[in-house]
Every structure is written in C-alpha cells, then in structure tokens.
Image (cartoon, rainbow, N blue to C red):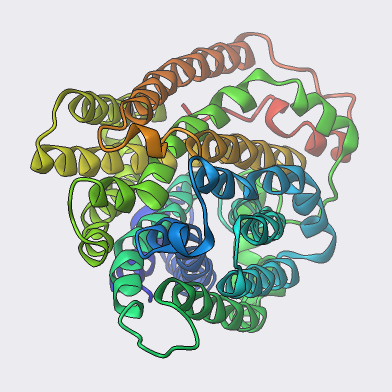
Length: 483
C-alpha cells in the first residue's frame, strides 16, 4: 500500500535541508547521514501508518456507494451521524493521549493504538445497523485520537526546527496517498465474491486486518527519541543531541511543565495557527469521505466513483508535497498559506457555479490541491514555533483537536437531501478557505510583533537557573518565531 514516491522523498530530505554553518565537512556529512537514516526508518514508518489511517477513515464513504446505507437500513441523515460519531471521543481523548505518550513513550503508544483502531475497523464488518456503527466509531475515535498528535510530537523530538515543517508536510502527504490508493483498492476488494461478507464488509475487514498487523511491526521499528534508536551509531546520537540543543529543541528528556502548560493555553498564537488545520480539514474530509459520494451522484457507478477518487487524491498528494517548498519560494509560511487558500476558494466557487460534470471533478482536484497544501503548512508552522516539550504537547494536541472539529463539521455539510448539487457543502468549503486567510494573517501579525519585542525589549534571564531558562521555551530571548 505504500506509495513509492514516499521513499524517494524521505531519502533525500536531510541532504537537501540540513544547513550547519561553522561545522566541519565531515561532521556535516555524518549528521546528514544520521538524518537520512531517520527519514528512511522513523519517517517512513509513520507515513505508512498514516496511509492506513487515511484509508480506514475513507472506507466509510467508499462503503456507502457499495450499498452500506441500504444494507443497514440507514435513511436521511443517519450516515452523517455515523460519520460524526468518532469525533466526540477523538476530541475528548486527544490531550490525555498526548500526555500518556510522554509518559510511556511513542514507540509503545503509537503501536498500541494502531493495533486497536485496526481491530475496531475489522469489527465494523460485523455491524448490522446504525447503532452498531456508532459504537464502533466511538471506539475508533478514542483509538485514533493519539495518532496524529503523537506523531507531531515525535517529529519535534527527532528533528531541528528548520526541518520540522518539511517532515510534517511529508507526514500529512500520507492522507493524500490514502485517498489515491484507497478508492482503487476498495474497488478491487468489492470484486471478492466470498459469501461470508458483502462487498463493503470485506473493505472494513481486510483494511482493518492490515492496519492491526502493521501496528505490531511499528513496535519493532520505532524509537522514542534519538538516544534510544537502535539504528543510529553512538557518534550520530551525540551529533543529533548537540544539534537539537543548538536549535533549542529539547530532545524528549524533560517532562511537561504544568505551569507553562497553562501559559500556553492562554496564547492566542497557538489557536490562530491551529485554525489553519481546522479550515483545511473541511476540504480534506470532503475528499476522503465525500468525494466518492459526490462523484457517484453525478451519475457514475459505484466502482467508477471509487476509482475516480484517485484523481483528487493525486492532486492533494502533489499539493502537500510541493507545499514544503512554499516557505522558501514565498519567503515565509504566511504567504504560502494565502496561496493554498486561494485554490480552495477558486475550487469552491466553481463547484457552486457549474453543473458540468467535468468541471466539478476538476474543481474537486483544485480543492484537494489547496486544502492538502494547507494541511502541510499549518501544523508545520505551529510545531516550528513550539520551542520545547510542554508547548509541543499542548500545541500538537490543540492543533489536532481543532483539526478534528473541522472533520466533525464536515460530517454534516454533505447531506443526502442536497444531492447532487451539494450547495451547502461547497459553500462551507468556501467559508473555510476565507477563514484560513484570516487566521493566517492574525498569526503573521502576532509573530512579527513578538519577534520585534525580542529584539527591542528581551526578557532578562541573568537571574534564572538553567532549568528556568529551558522552561521559557518560545519565550526565551534567543528564540525567534518562524514566519
């Protein structure tokens, strides 16, 4: 299921991005080799895990066009209720799951929850009615709540800040990979004629089984942070530890500071940056869950609709991969976000304005390109500005909580009664594109003011202990927010 482009991406990242002024050439090369190893192992594993996550989320929409609604007696908005059922537990367990990960380690926790959500997906093959699906989706939300937040934190523990955005962008590209291959795989699974399950039941069972099995493999391949890596040499670990210290990115050894947690909870910048993912997830969940349904209502068959999901998926994959270069091309994350949001707005206007099938499918591709680009930019921008483990834990959780709220909202915007035009759903995507522009502007203004204040009126740290200085995280006078 893994897309071959992922390996090409991660294998070349470290050598292209790592800039260490003043270091010797030999040291540079050794450190680059170390990060290439991390890209090829840790990053590849979490990408594949998220591909499976994306496919497991999308299989509800793929199963709907295969007859799920009729077989389970769902009518009206029942399907939307089932789609949304995972989000209450997803949001409720988000922050606790992130804090548990800090206690027990990413290797064990991410592996465990992957196995659990795979088993839950297998269980949906046995669901007979709306109530069964709601119960399964509640458990699915609880299991998946720690996946993305845990990965975001893990990336900040392994990479210096200048490398975080590109790794997070590459990680989020796995959602698009899932959209690319999920539809064609589901279309293939539907051809199974074994009477034990119906076609849509086989989709849940087979994909859930693969996910649960991969969770066991993750336990063998992951490590909590560089010092615990089984792959890195002792010298490489020391170089990475030094590099993270120079970057003021704490390498996973410090506990969450509860006092600082409260300070970060009152920081408007965390929320304004997290709202970028909230906005982007309107489009992302439209592609993952509803694109097949939208295309099916244009008059295409179930198998054709599933296969055609690959087109917007490919555009989303391209959008999120290219987004890692936007901060370099546009000089900062702000203008990069504005660029991606523009595509979302243009796509939404086309979807609202035309009834031509070709134009609407093309607009879904543009929507995917723009919203997946913002998915790569928003979380990376936020996590580049954490400065330490406490802000990383809180920022990562809030980022995905608001992203989850975006998914919850999207669950109800594409309603059966609105088919085939879906004016309300497309209108909400237009609103989300405009909102992302607004919150990106707010974030940019806050960052400019804070960086200016650090230059003109920095905090006096001369009387502080080393621990107190480290606990300042992003408030440290030497820390500069990434624009």
